[in-house]
Image (cartoon, rainbow, N blue to C red; front, side, top):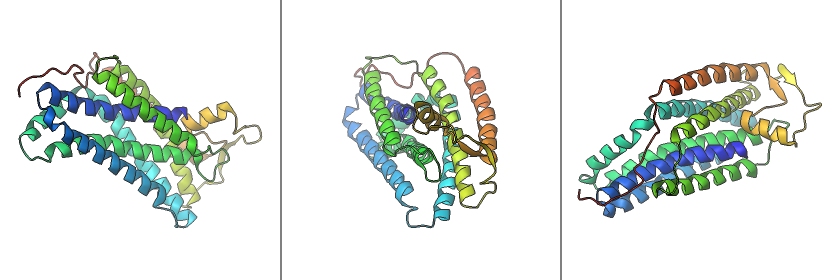
Amino acid sequence: MLASYLIGLREGLEAALVVSVLVAYLVKTGRSALLWKIWVGVGLAVAVSLAFGAVLTFGPRGLTFEAQEAIGGSLSIVAVCFVTWMIFWMAGNARSLAGELRGQIDSAAGGNPLALVVIAVLAVGREGLETALIVWSTTRSVTGTGTVDGLPTWEPLAGVALGLATAVVLGVLIYKGAVTLNLTVFFTWTGAFLVLVAGGVLAYGVHDLQEARFLPGLHSLAWDVTSWYDASSVYAAVLKGVFNFSPQTTWLEATVWVLYVVPVMFLFLRAVRRRPTGAVRPADPTPTKETA
């Protein structure tokens, strides 16, 4: 549940900060009458994200086991690629994100009446689709069939829901100036955490493809610790939730985990160290009325 909570918190806070940028800028420039377009766009983005999650969850049902595993494994790898790109994109563009959104609002406010809705849909929907994909992948990996230590489905889903709720509260408090959060530190630590989670999702995706007989080595185990591993223990829940650890891990799963986590973590931390110093301030939390 801890891993799912942190995923929901990070992804939810990214979306909340984007919304706060859009809302704060419209209020600050005296265009509050246009706020409903932002909320319509946010609602559409949430609906699309939920629909995307539903398609991922229920779409493959009715197919053969091998087909389900092949689709699940392929989508898990796509999720890892998407999340990895978003981690590096956020590390490099967080500082300029607010300026870009404000420029888009200025261009859209006096033009097509649907332009602001589209901006909100795209800005929030990007975070929503990323969240749906990584949540679906991690939930599937920690509760998946074919493992000896799967967790109950409600645990990761409850963790994500709590994380998203916390993110909404934090987003509102940040917008109102009630709390100050060092976003640079927050996104650095959660970005490193997501690299570890993505490594586990990638390993599980490979396991799926091995079960689908698309990749070899399903019975070639790097280790088998099921004789002493207690799947109901606290340490097992942490290992499964954060690293997607399996007591029966194939050589191919272990290899792709190392080949992904080590270089990606190195490149991410190097990108963070090379980033200009100073806190990320994606939104002006103190709205003041001005004439446009």
